[in-house]
Length: 235
Image 1 (cartoon, rainbow, N blue to C red):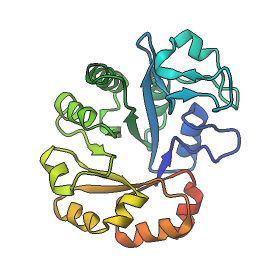
Image 2: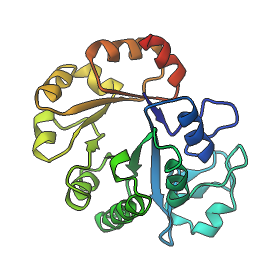
Image 3: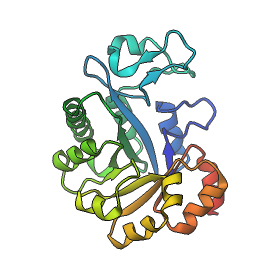
C-alpha cells in the first residue's frame, strides 16, 4: 500500500506534509507518495501544485511561479508550512521502514524538468536514501532523465497510461503506474507487464470495489488516499 500524498486521512495530517509522512510510518505502510515542484527561485518543495490554496481563494499561489519565501508565508490547513524536499527527506531518513515514491510534476520546459531531476537525485543522495526511492512522472522526458541520471538500479515508473508495457520495458523503466481507469480498460497490460519483469502500480484506489479488483488482478502496489480501506480489502 502506497499512501497517496502521505497518510493524510489521519486526523491532523494534510496532503504532502511532514505529519502525513510520519503517520504513514506509524501505520506501517509500505511507502509514501509525494509531489515535487520547483519554485521560481529554484527551491524544491513538496506540494501537489500547480496551485497552493483552494480555487476560490483570492490569495492562492501558483507554486512554480512563486518565490520560496512567499510560498512559505502561506500555511497548510493544519498550520504546517509547505515542506522543502530536503526537510521531507530528513524526516524520511528517520523512517527507514517506509519507502518513498517521488513524483516530479510537469514543469514549463524540458530544461527546467532536467534541472529538477538533477536536484532531486542530489537531495536523495545527500540524505542517503537512494535505496528507498522510486521515481514517477507523467512526462516521459522526466522518466527518461531519471533513467539517464540516477544510479542504474533506481526504479522509475511511468504514469500517463498511454504506453504499452513492451514500450515501457524498452525505455528502461521498472514498471507502469497507471490509473484505475486505464488498467480497467486494458487489464491485459497487467499480465503483459509481469511477463516482461515489470512491476505494476495502480492509482488512485479510493473505493473497495476498485481495491478488490486490483488485488484480484495481482498488481504489486495500490496507491490510495484511504490506506485503512485497502488494508480491510486485503484482509
